[in-house]
Image (cartoon, rainbow, N blue to C red; front, side, top):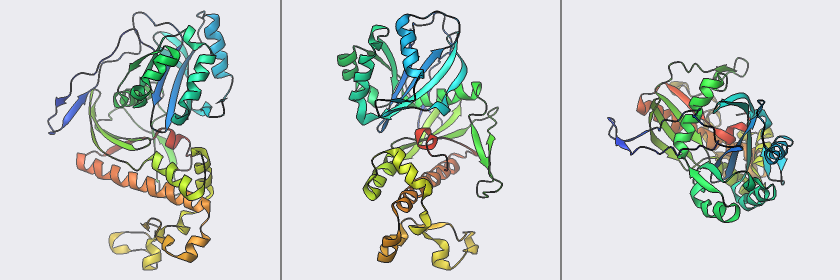
Length: 349
């Protein structure tokens, strides 16, 4: 939501661990005076643009233009062939700036930014709003486009600060949104369990976008970026496009959902004939990602679905290994993965 005051990041300070620590700015969900509607926030990433819209549901009277906008946003789940509203992510009974309402989440490819700008202009949103709060690299990259095409002023917020504040907001208002999987290696016993956030610190945030950033959070107001990897959601989609001929993230996920990565990856049992008990490596552990693809016969047998699934397994295994090493290095026992759209549209992960 737009704010009447700009929250600025305090200067970096040297932390006791010998690296630059970043203190979070103080941000309140209520202010003395609420800014005018509509309230939008936007995160412009390298692959996807994510938009959040606050729909007021209390009895306050809104302008006719805003009522029309509300009907347009909430009355559909697809926009201009490329935009999607993730209905399953909708948050109801949210209180922001003393207003009650629902949060709606919309996404579209960053490559379609011009289409998005034309849509905003056609719906005359600029007549009822002149400011948008934005995070992500695109808040800098596309700032001139917003000002030139829409005459919007962008208030930029640091994406890592926003990420952690978002986790804290969700934890305080939606207790079941943060969870972990119990018995993750047992398909019969594996289940989703709410994560107890009463004493969370320190914890690790694994933020998977086009690339990956891993943050260690030490308190409500202090964190640092400990590492990351260039192999993220953008890598998954790029490789799937090359290997399978798919065009979109949704197509890649649909292929991966029905594929069998063991037709592509070489497992421990393919090398040892079973488990490698000395080091507690089970036979179905991946020993070499895409290891079967050096065989002409295996290449001919592997389907597009298998290749997409193997790509997904390769990326997620790599992220998981790096996250575990980061947690061990930081002495962190609790690990919180903020997976974003990559996870939200991958229910079988």
